[in-house]
Length: 203
Image (cartoon, rainbow, N blue to C red):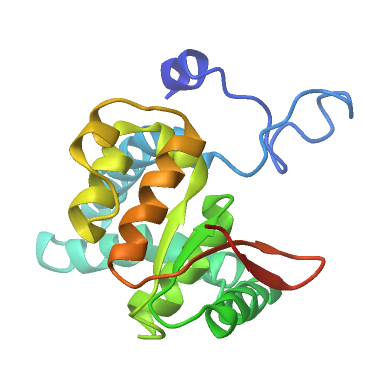
């Protein structure tokens, strides 16, 4: 995990590095705690093994395992309220934000998004809650990645193979998306304008 943090040039996040670094130091835009997943998995395995070893010293082997599992699971119980996001205000804000976009989008629209922060709430409402399955969302910054263009072509038929294999620039890629969307009787709208609260036509 230390190697990953160094290799990927991890900067301080909103919560770690606070009080240690100057206020104008470079920070990550959001928490990047997934950098440490390998360390957490290793720590968890060692903690579980340690709990079993300690409990076996005091109990017979039949009752040691359930007690050790309870001890190993205690961090989940003790930290659940801190990590449970069900009642977090941002969750309802994200749902309302995505709901507004879905409400404004015409039937069978291709909705362009400026970032994954706009895309994820849309995916949630569409895929989990079943809202507006007729809509396709495309994240503009990801169009630079060949794998993403390949997915847009494969799933929605909105790009041709030459646009997938070679990036011709965002504008040229959007022209292909607009042409193919028109053939499918789809309007291309967005990105969502927070000030005007509008999804303007794009093509």
